[in-house]
Each structure stands twice: as structure tokens, then as C-alpha cells.
Image (cartoon, rainbow, N blue to C red):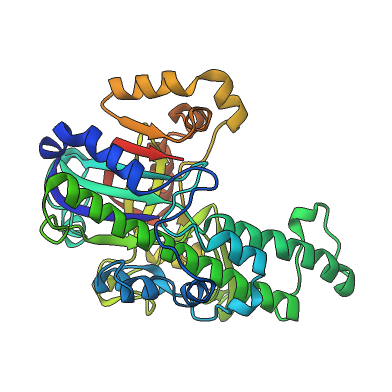
Length: 384
């Protein structure tokens, strides 16, 4: 997830909303098999999966400040490209700067005055004006990460026999962390995370170009600063208190996201006082939230919170209830202009297929594991 501010207001954007979304749709390719903006060689791609966002910024696809506004400064340093298959590299090297499909999106959102819950923290994150426009992106490592998962699923099936491990479902295939297979996967997965950071970094570069083109103004003058970029599916070795003792544990955040508190040593100086920005996506009809991490999350949930509203029905069930074309028209009547690569894919992502985002935020807020800062209302959306 990645969130970017602008100094534009909805009044300024609304007359150009269709042009802006259409530009984003062309600028940031979406859908299964979409080819990206950066044409990297195999050697360059190996550098990208080693260096993440750092490579992008050094090669002109971003600003230096973007790196410090990214989880882990946009790079997981134990990545080893040698642990990644040639097939995975071949799948990933042409996908930089692409959204993909499923629940991935690029969304233009409005900050309403009544939806700012913490004025001071919102201001420190660059959100200070009523009706301000921000941009949110949700996507990952594309076919590259999927191929790494597929490759190691096969490797782990063999490893389980070797280590005497039995599971009820092959999708739960695993290996001991300190084994050669476990360490190889840990290093390969870091490559996938670095690809995801780089992918979102290139997308941000293209968003800035698109806004500049539509509004005939430099991205710097539009104050298109990133609030934060945080992973939504990753496992990391971290130190936490367990039963009164400080221990190193693997924290796997899947269906969850990081929510570190103020003064955590891993946070950049910008977030030391506030805590880590947390981005929780809702649906393309109902809105999303920006929150901050808390000490209670550190104490009770290994520094984690929910990552999104979560589905209430399957994709197939959603498609039985609405056609994509009808949903597109209904959303436009509500003031949300959406462009999608696939109409059946759009139907899968209908708002009614997801839990109420307000209920989810109430739950994490009452649990004390993240604190709401701003609710963000959609007005334009690009879907795969």
C-alpha cells in the first residue's frame, strides 16, 4: 500500500476527473499480464530485486524522500537474487510499474473535513486541507512473487519428507527456518518484497507524471509527497516480548500490516513522534483509512493491525449479483469514476462484497492496535 498527498482540492480536480483517471489508466498498466513502463535487462532486474526503491530513485524514478517514507527504507537487505528461479525473473522483469488484477487498484480520494480524526498528526503527514485530494495504490510483486511462492511450494514438499513434517494441505508446505530450504526461501521472498517496493515506486513516478500532464504543473509544485509505503504480505525476523522475555521471532503479516508505535528504532525520523503511518484499504465504493501504530499493537499483536476490510463473499458470488458494466454506471452516479481492464473483474470488487470499513476501523481502534487519523473517500479508480 502507498499513499500520496497533493495540494489540489476536489473543486480543482472534479472538472478533470475523467481525464485524470483515463490518463492514469493509460500511464499505469493494469490487468493480468500487463507489461510495465521500465524495460529492465536481466542484470538490471537482479539489481532491482536487491535494492528495491533505492534502485528506482537512483535511476530517476522518484525522489530521495520517497525512500525514507517507505517501510524498511524500501529495501530488505537479506535479499539474494541467486535464490530466485530464472522463470520468476522472466515473469517479473517486464512488470515494473503495473497494477495487476484482483483487489489491486489506483484510487483518487478526497479528504472531507469531518473525516479528519487527528488534526495534528494528519497535518504532519501532509493532510491539512478540507477537500484535499490524495492518491492510494494497492499492488505487489506481480507474477514474480507468485512464481517464487510456486517454486518454493514444490521445494518445501520435498523438504517436509526430509524433516519428517506432515501437513493436512499442500498449501501449508513448510520447512524449518534455519534449514537450507527455509533460508533460501526467506532470501527469495525478500527479493519479491523489493520488487513490490520498486513496482509501487515506479507507479508513483508515473502518477506524478500523469498529474503533471493533466494539470500542467510540476509534481513538486503539486506537493505530491508520499505519506508512506507499507507491505501487506511479508515475513520478517523481529524482536518482541514473549512471555516476559525478549525473543527473535518470525512475524508473518498476511491479511495484516505493520503498525509500529512512536519511537520504534526502525522508524524514520519523520515518524518517531507520531508512530508509523498505517494504510487500511476498504472497497472502491466505501473508502479507506490512514491510521498510526500504537504501543498496544507492539505489546499484543507483534506490532500489527488489520490490512483491509476483508471480503464477505467470494469473487464468484459477487459476479452473480452484479454485472461490471452496471456497477460502473452505479458508481458514476455516486460521483466515483472507475476505469477497469475487465468488467467481470470489476464486479468481483463491488463494495457489498466487503465488510463495512467503518466497523473494521472501530474494531482495531477499540482494540487499541492502531489509531485512526483520516478517512479517505474515493472519487476515481483504476482497476485491473
